[in-house]
Length: 438
Image (tube, rainbow, N blue to C red):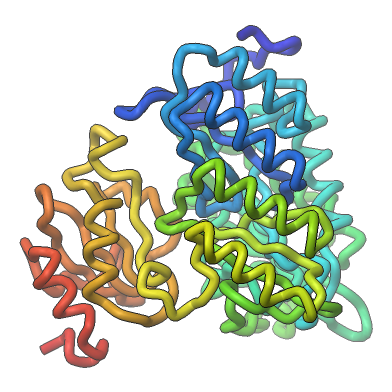
């Protein structure tokens, strides 16, 4: 299909799937649907389910950036794209699709721990990204995070630019960092909330002014342009005193599965096993959102969904209905511990069938922290954007090397064992963490 406004040739071409750019994989084409702040309306969820059945093999994935993708797409790319556009799931201007990479908490605007509701600013940032032709030159991987201080928040995903809300002197501010994450990234300065949009625009303009075509990400530019030099040329008044530079985003430990407290009512967090939804699952979530919630869903960076605004009296009925569809609704379910990439059934680079192996491994692990074990079919580590506490890196079918996260080591962390079978890996991961060093 040729869009009404075809994209110009980008100086930073990408192999990442998008709405129009359907990328080939071993199991067929992949189309990624970028959702505004993770928001998906129930009617749109139904449209995705129909598209996955009609134009693909019925596999829908929740991604680690709060988006959806359809896998196994056949030859009718035009029909698929038109059906998604008709549901309001993409911009009519193809050139602006790639740059809509803005991550929020799935409880933005509803979390009782938040400093402020960042949704109005998020809408302004998305409008800026889509309406500014120059920003369409950014890489499809270039990403921004807007953190309102929510208790339910992913703080470990690296972003090219992140902004985090804080309250200073009875005024709302946005601290920011580059090529890092709120959990452990260096705060480089802060601006008043009302200057947030101007800061984002200035950072993107300066990046494009300085970066070469090969420097598609902020971390690459900062290797030759120190952060202080970058900030000095922004043309925005940035506060950089000790109060700001020494500020740390408080860690978050609130659950994202099961019952989640909102400012009013409840939210219900559910996860498709290993990030994969069937059309029936997605329709079921949409049905529950209409009947018991506010008709909306939020995709999360944990490859899960959240249904906000469910009355406490209806919560258990909603949970039972979704659990009956095969969705994980409690953090202590063994399969919730495991994250896995597509694996060799759908990806030519994978060394093992990680999806099938993850199911087998989960049965050996028992309950534990959600998302704590990551099975990766190759070193690209596509399934998670941060380093998991434990990573099993495939070396051949059914055999893995075990890494444990170590803040002092790059990459996946410390190598603890090699060439493990799933039974051996399960036995090691079932031990308390301190025994894995023995």
